[in-house]
Amino acid sequence: MPRAESYAGPGRLRRSRQWSSVLVACLAAAACAAPATTEGQAAQTAPSGRSWTEVTRAARGATVSLWMWGGDPKGNAYVDDVLTPAARQLGITVRRVPVADTKDAVNRVLSERQANVTDGAVDLVWVNGDNFTTGEQAGVWRCGWTQSLPNMAYTDPADPLLATDFGTPVHGCEVPWHKAQFVLAYNAAKVTAPPTSLEGVLAWARQHPGRFTYPAPPDFTGSVFMREVLYATAGGYRQVPSGYNQAAYNRLTPALWTTLRDLAPSLWRGGQTYPRDAVALDKLYADGQIDMTMTYGPATLTDLVANGTFPKATRVLSLKGGTVGNASFLAIPATSGHQDAAMVVANLALSPQQQAAKADPRTWGQFTVLDTSRLPPGPRGRFAELPSSPVVPAYPVMSKNAQPELSASWVTPLDDGWRRAVLERR
Image (cartoon, rainbow, N blue to C red; front, side, top):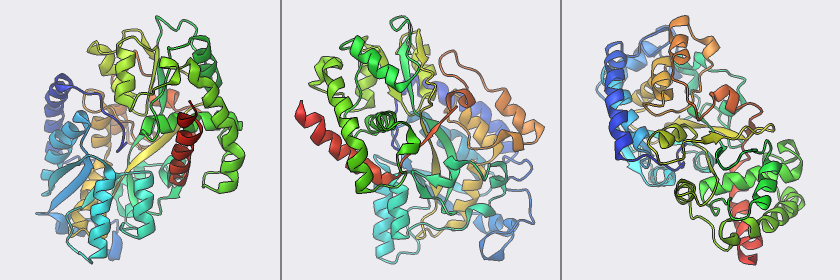
């Protein structure tokens, strides 16, 4: 996801580029052509009643500026070495614009919108959560275009992760790119009887003082962990309304704050200090100072074990109640001057070939948004052939009983509440 932390080092980037070069030969040569790709289903219509063939023809020769979080070397390598060459075969140049935070891209679009710019600097944005909601509320996204993409036929229209973005209805304003699942990982050599519920994790932490902690919100990973605890203390995610309201906050958070305050003395350094972010948390785990870590990007775990950063006995906790999951998307600003080309690139990114390449842990390891049961046998086989990991379970296993994300409107009140009720009351 756009704000997820990256743990890749230069060595991983080199391996990623080497593998990516092999994929490009196949993907680019075929222009990712398969049933319902950018060159398929010519009769399908696009916005304004044009056929998809007309859209792809109009897109040729354009440059699409893809603004995306630049802190993930494997994600950068995938765009540069796999997606960009395939787009070039369709006559489109993709220019990756790295940003430190996705809100930088959204702020650029907001300022262009206010200035009535019609040929803006941003053509496509990797976005989700509060950044999408901010843009949606300001009316900066082009909407009603995603169902015209041929490759949307391979997604499940009933998939709740694709219909809403952190509680905000998508309404055809962004196309899904990949899924994510929050997980906790542990050192099986140290945690010999791993807990099977979030409540069990908290109990384990109290029984093993100093061996567990979490990043301080508003760090993205720390905030997600706090929402997991909110679901647990509320009696399940169904007890927490997706949309924020003050009455629900007042009713549900006292138990959350009490739980986290009571937990604090059992945390690393007695809860007197917290890791500033997920990178710092992972370093504590890698150094053996704690026995559990957490991430919204579990695909990184395989490489971290393989390259010796994480203990060989690292495994993902299997929690019966499930964990929070979401999807990341690609959105087109209404200020883009290359909207046809941005649509073609978005459709390409959604193609079975690109989704399979991106799902390969040697390339990026992001979970597909496609419903593989809808794919023809050939493309479906690509996913079946993806390498398995001794560390990370398959996505269907890991996402079992997945919990939906709360609306982005919950995030800031919870982060602020944690600071007042937990951090400042140490």
